[in-house]
Picture (cartoon, rainbow, N blue to C red):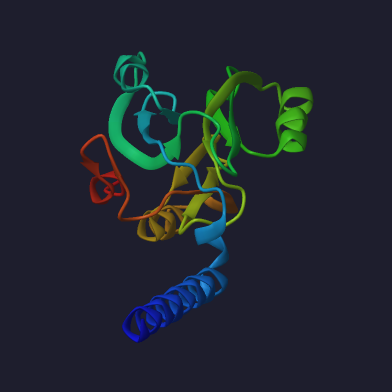
Length: 194
């Protein structure tokens, strides 16, 4: 009986220690690890029209390759194709007068561009984070006023190069899943090539 009582005491102590360690790890885990991050990402493709000087972003590869007058530039970032976790819509808008695609997560900005700038809402391009959670990275927004073109990139190098060419820095449009994410056998490293 002494052996079984000792064994029960050891099991109880190990169980208590394991529960204590698990609680300690959960308490010390970064907030983004506890947040509702979403799980199914998809690439958002970037296409460019040199004739109208416009960047176009879509989660449908066929739209990127089939857009008349546009050349596909590859995967711009990882996003969510449906609303998951703490994501919000990235609205896609287009101005036929300016020949410009514009993307925003802000409903007030969306409505302002529709009312005052002649942009038409084309729907949700994707779903993204509006704050930096879940190990996400910034999706930078730049604007070339001389040609009325919005550019979105996760690359700091590309952002800095665009700024040197005269683009205006319009801050961070959204946050998207970061490096190390794998989707449909496409390593994230290939997503950030452009």
